[in-house]
Image 1: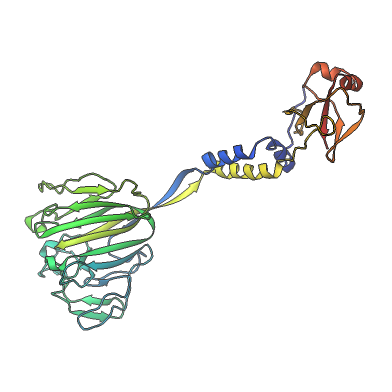
Image 2: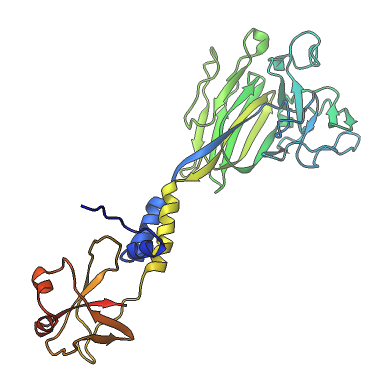
Length: 383
């Protein structure tokens, strides 16, 4: 027996989808084709050794701001604006006294480190560069051609009157996964981490005083806050303190656009980690959307069939038949016995010829054209 092949070209595809309703195709595309099966995840870690291009280095005491909003005691504005590729960094003030904005603090504790012997031994946690709110008790700066404003003595805020926040505005919605909190000991009265998604919904973590140990006690002096966990989290070993967490009902952790760290007292941050999701449509999505388009192109206008002048045919249905090539569906119509045409009958401008319907009715297929007409049944195929 010879093998049968179905010719697969544009016309064949059009005929294949001709019987699919537009509503069916649309539902399939929305429910199946529009779904996202997977996504490319790009993970980032801002360790403040470099800017968010991960090339430009940051130095001890460097004033950090993406915007020209930092001015030193001499009235000099910063001339170098850091970050801005993945995230913009700014600060806000809540206390009556204020602070000098965000700054880099080198936490190297080895002899010869730039801050060894300085006012902040509790920040010497050996994590490289960390980010602080600069104390306004040490406002003296230098203006470097490469790094802009740099504070002579990097030092974090310690008083309630210096209460402020470091704000990260992401340039795209992200999932913020964790951040390292440093020196949240008895000298830090209050620290709050607030995440906001693109719809304004929030998740907040209140970190209590004493959530970390102090490095001067012989401990590591820092602890990681998991920002994917919406529940209370324990502090460092031996602290016995827990965070308190709240979030809005519709908060979306994968579409965060802002992270705000509110600091009341001595503390610092490091290693801000976040993920960016790039959706990848399924291959089936492209196929189904293509089929929906072909369905629109392939759908033919089905003409009304008349029993006689002024009467509309009460019903019709389609019979599909399979042969060596894809053929058009053959409509089978109920015809009145009064019909006397022997060759062609015009249906609103379309020639409908008498033809043989294979596999539809064996008894009907064996009868002659005249017998079929007399029996009131005929098979029409539109050209």
